[in-house]
Image 1 (spheres, rainbow, N blue to C red):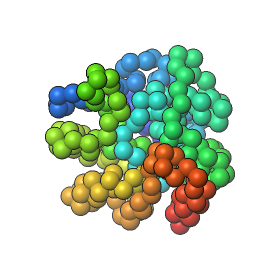
Image 2 (cartoon, rainbow, N blue to C red):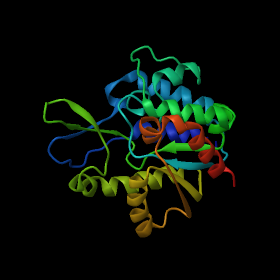
Image 3 (cartoon, rainbow, N blue to C red):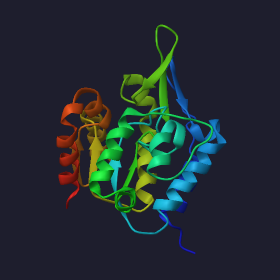
Image 4 (cartoon, rainbow, N blue to C red):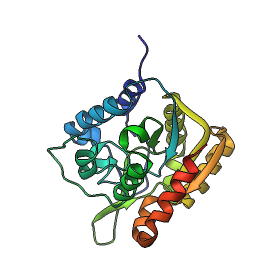
Length: 229
C-alpha cells in the first residue's frame, strides 16, 4: 500500500528527537514528547491537507517558535489559526504566534488553506523549538544561527532533517527560504549537499509583522508572485 505524504510526515514527527549536544544555556523543546495532544492535532492537520501523494513545493523556515509549531506541531500555526482556519481545536493550550498571523493572511490571499497546502509544505531545517536562557533567568525563543557553537552542534542534524523532508515527496527544483540570515546558512549547507535547485529568499513573517506591518499587503503580494512558476 502506497504511503501518503500525510503518512510520511506523521511518521517523521513521531520519530523526531534531538539527542545531540547543545551549548550551555540552550534547550530544545519537543512538543510531541511534552504534550500528547500535540501529536493528535498534528495528525489531524496532515491527514486533512496531505492525504495524497502529490508533490509539494518546500517553504523553509528557521526553527519553530514555542507558540507556533512548538505547541501545535504545525509550522507557523498557533492554536488560534489551527482552530479558526483549519477547524482543529486544541484543548490543552491556547497560543498566539505573531508569524502565524502573516502566514494565514497570505494563505487566505492565495486561495485558502486547502488550496495552499495542496501545493506547499512548510518546515524547518531544525524542526524543533530552541530556547535560550536570558540573563534574568527567563527562557526565550532562539534561532539555530544565534550562536556559532549552537550551529556547529546542530548542523549535521539539520542536513539529515532536510533530506528527510525532501524524501516526503517534495519538488526541490525551486525552494523558498524565509529570512535573509536563514538563507545565508541554508546556502552554505546547499553548497555542500546540493539539495535544492533555485532558491528564492523571502522576508520572514515575524520580521514583516514586527517591522513592516503597515506594508503587509506588499509582502503578501511578493510571496504570491514568487510562488507563481
